[in-house]
Length: 235
Image (cartoon, rainbow, N blue to C red; front, top):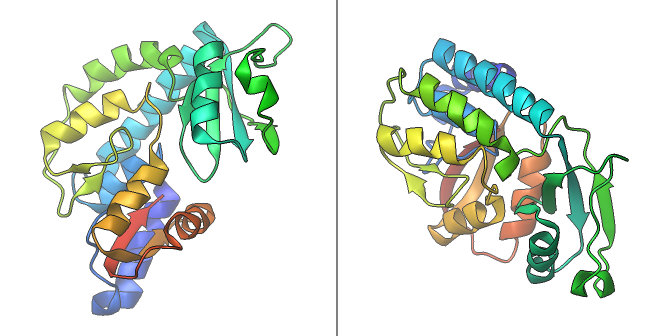
């Protein structure tokens, strides 16, 4: 988050008026906090504090109820949703699907023996994370963040922020407070977020940060859409 904000400030200093004005902002998971700072919802120090507390609480939740995550590539979304339901896991949308859920004692995800077995995914890659993020196993983190966020003042964003949970625009500080609590236990609807922005006429996505993984995903999602107005998303 700190590196992304540093990149944004450098781009603003160097680019000045040549830097396109964003129509929307969005960020995947922790990146949503970066978007809040970029949209002047929170000042930098408050954003750093909240990101730190979020990480601490999510780690503690993962220690209380061990879980893991896996990237599922090449499986139909409807089939994956059925498998997730059978195995009590949660599907998180991104450039490929991700699942999060309970971990067996041998460290592996529970496997479905139902209809999902006949619908093999192209690849299933375990993710090196400390817990089942964006799943109900993060509920203890929600309890802690509720108390912390109650003491924070959220300004209205300078441009709408597309929510991880609903893939719809957030335009008020009260909406954003609720979003930050819900996103801890909810799937990240990234594909739907990009589709919404494309549907609103966005054709250019500018990624501010140390990597380009989200922009590559955005290109895949929007490659069949018409080009339109500028949009900025932060990670």
